[in-house]
Image (tube, rainbow, N blue to C red):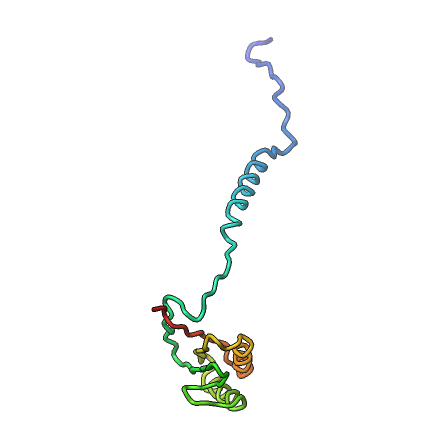
Length: 138
């Protein structure tokens, strides 16, 4: 060993492999989070119509009231109509304003199929906003 000369030692060789332990840890934490939150996102739909709390009709800028009574008779704005007249009046309302809302009031005894028929006529006329009106329980 001479004056001013330092002996050089070989350092560690560079690591050529990726350390995957932190990646696995993060992935396991994410899996646990998803396992815990997945059941919370699933919900069931419970309906109790036609009586519901907070059953106040919304303030729509324009609306048409369609009523179905027990006998299946259809009324538009409290006037009885036939099925062709219903289609004509709803088409006229859609032509005047496509954002017109239908406020559908149906008796409890009306079969669901009849309600769907009226909804189909409304959709065919070009009205897609339908609100179901219910009464508050006493």
